[in-house]
Image (cartoon, rainbow, N blue to C red):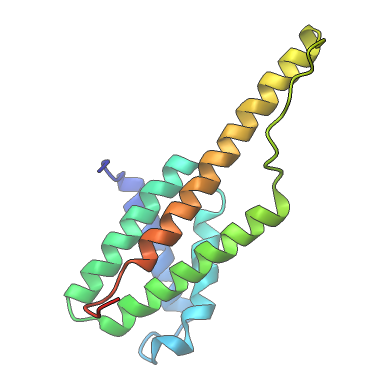
Length: 149
């Protein structure tokens, strides 16, 4: 496991603070989890894959801590909202991003080779980010809150 940055924990605090402002978290989590999704998007949509990965890990840690501290409704709401955000993010990326691997023609000149190299670098950045989103969808789905899955 990697070390989670202090900035990632700070981002989680910003997200949860925003959820507290936007939602009545004393209600059943089913009543507010859909509204809470936008709090994740506000903070996480502009992160690179490394920042995204660390922040997701910090969120997962916080969900488990909240549940372990007896805040079951809050933990389930955060988990459900985060899971919903991740699926929406994946759907957005699938719709708006181009994931076709670039191809270099056999007769490419130096300029085309440079463009290819740039396109490949961009492709790998997008793929890494998309893979990270998929990884966290699977990880958050594993959280069971004491129930057998």
